Length: 249
Image (cartoon, rainbow, N blue to C red; front, side, top):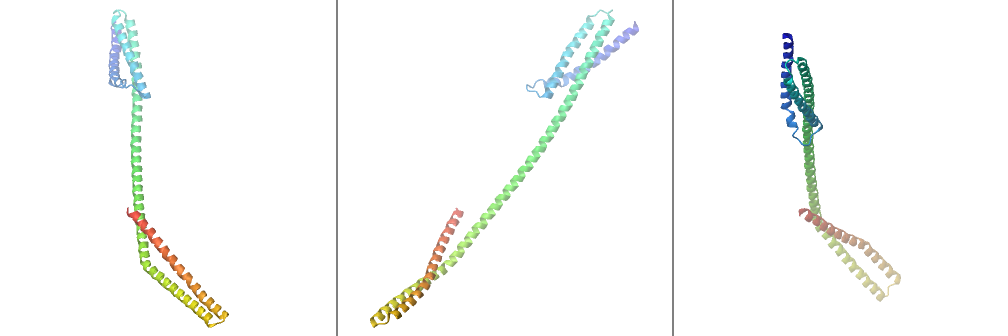
């Protein structure tokens, strides 16, 4: 009888400690995870484990109540009830350990996601810095090209302004030569008329006219070329001035 009493007390003591440990483990974490409306796969698993723990706790309470209700002489029934309670406690502890492992996995996944997010953020910042530097370099190159082009236009305008007086002189010289040629042509015509009046031969007069006309024709292209050069110079100068005015705006 004394040995039976001792064996009955040990399981009850062990089960009480296991039940207390399981109760603390159950109340420490799952209750906070059940409050979120949209749960991930890991959170759904956590909720399921917590629900199972609650159901087993109810079963454990029922078993304790049955222990109290059994008569003192029903030691076998009490032992069976305690064995059932021990098995349920062990099952619940196994579920809690599984839940703990799942939480560890979830923690590792979250930590990995956090590290990946930090790495992506660092990469994006580096790419943004590179794009910013490239943009600044392109803008600086463009400004430098515009300054060079503007300076070239100013230089060309200066060159044409310096050449303009020379072209004017060439134009005046060509006009003077044309006027001289016309004067000589008039003189030839006068001589021709004089020859006609004085009875010169027709052949001599034609040769003289041909010679003077040929000389006049030789000087005519030079005058036309000078006029073309002057017109081109004026056109180019106007175009450059328009481009400079546009750039200065």
